[in-house]
Image (cartoon, rainbow, N blue to C red; front, top):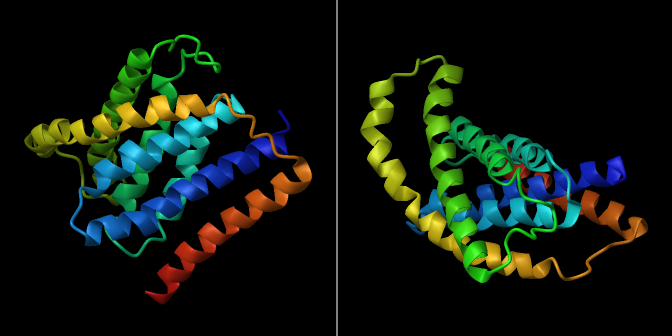
Length: 212
């Protein structure tokens, strides 16, 4: 695949993911909804899997996590660092979970297998991202990591993974149906569109951060 096309794909999916975390995530938070669970179960899994379906490139999801995590640092709401670390970790964990699967997903022949893979992905991406965040954030921030703090909140982390698991159990089979659609976009449309949408996501989030 053309490297420029791939890089722009990473950037637009990562930007859309980061934008949803900053804008839609804030809306969920203000509404008192389980923000982290909803963001992982629907938005993170959606963008990560769509990129795998249409680009068929290993390593892309890690790149998306880096883009989305960087954009999340500009969100004036919530914990900037911990959220950014979680997003990067989620991209990497998704990459590991789906590493052995072929890009045509021939291993997931039945709806039950697809839904099961969605449940597994949603659960592991959420709890792994949460755990990694609890370990790395205090280390990066210089406050120090204490294992007893992680042990204390482990029951909440493990229980919190149920919601994103159930959501992803519906999302994954639905998205796998989309792989049958031919959504190839010509370069003369693809390049300006991806650049424009990505730039808009960054302008909105960074602009909001500057005005906050």
